[in-house]
Amino acid sequence: MNIAMLLEMAAEGDPDRVVLGSHDGGITASDLLERCRRAAIYFEKSGAEVVGYFGLNEDTLPVALFGAALAGIPFAPLNYRAPDEQLRGILGRVAGGIMIADDQEVARLNGIGATNVLTKDEFAAAIAEPVTGEHSFVDPEEIAVLLFTSGTTSEPKAAVLRHRHLVSYIISSVEFLGCAPDEAQLICVPPYHIAGIAAVLSSVYAGRRIMYLPAFEAAAWVRLATEERITHAMVVPTMLPLLKMPMASVRSLRGKSRVTVLTPPE
Image (tube, rainbow, N blue to C red; front, side, top):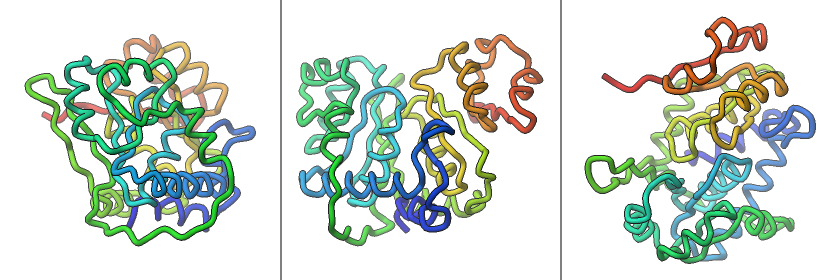
């Protein structure tokens, strides 16, 4: 299976369920699938060999992720915190692709050798019009996501995640449309973190609405969790002290809220 089939199944099972954005006026499963199909056609026509993402969390991310999957092209979210020297090497390994970036990152990317860089607004404009066409079969052995290591001890290495690996993990651990329509996941980990990718796939398949916080900031996290009636959130241990509230208070944001603490392997 292609990871995009997780979205296709959700769109067929409950097309009008809001799966992305605010509880008021968010994007439904069918709308998200349509945007991803347009993105896939755009990627295919461009001849891109990889789809890069360079910037903060935003609703653009799942569109690019699933669009790349439908097109059979690897998706590579890059670490915008990496120094230029490391980024030059990484960019060389994702050459021949499209890079979707925050406005303020375009000049930096161009300055270190990136080509075919689109702002998120330019990408949205490129896929704004309805399209027709079928997508070719994507072998489950094909690469779905490329995640680059931080490079703290050596040159960044690419962790290769294939479609069959990711789909198998989601289907075996998540109940299809098992979430109530009012459940929502707050994602604040960076796009290049595996937890961010896993949260998108599992939430879409489970029917849980995704709400993005562009970058972690404690006051903004609490405010968004309250305003958007978040029921599930994911933080790493270093974020917890910054929230400046005990776990009991975090849970009290809503009766069934749950915070999952990610801890590094021993």
